[in-house]
Image (cartoon, rainbow, N blue to C red; front, side, top):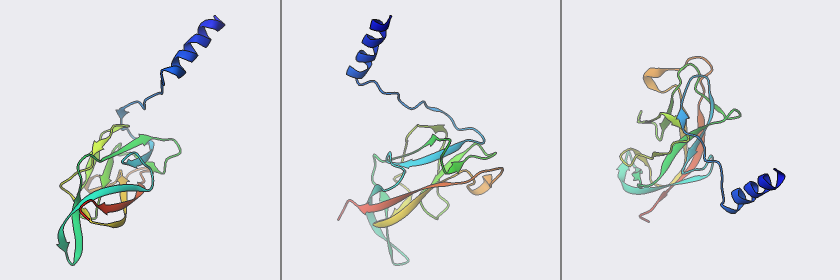
Length: 150
């Protein structure tokens, strides 16, 4: 029996087995952590600059980047009574709705973001018409927007 367990453990280590996070529906009163490109802080969002608005350079995210959230008992965010998480990449009331924990969603390439510089991506259960209910509170990820076009 012990030899069988040792062999199974050795096989697991040799094959590089690691537990993949389980994809599960976002529900009410769950604590969470937001991710941008797989990071909880310090993520770089690659952009393509497309001009200026009110004198500020703006652009769009380059394709192939992701946002997600994971169920995390020690996370800063909480879904409260809403059972929802919205990713807010800017202050223009544009958002991405996350439906499942641990399921990366494409960072939208059609929403304006800064060309370069520091920023914050907010993961908020209280966006817009939903409003805040219960213990709902947002999590945020500090990012650096970086122009891929120079």
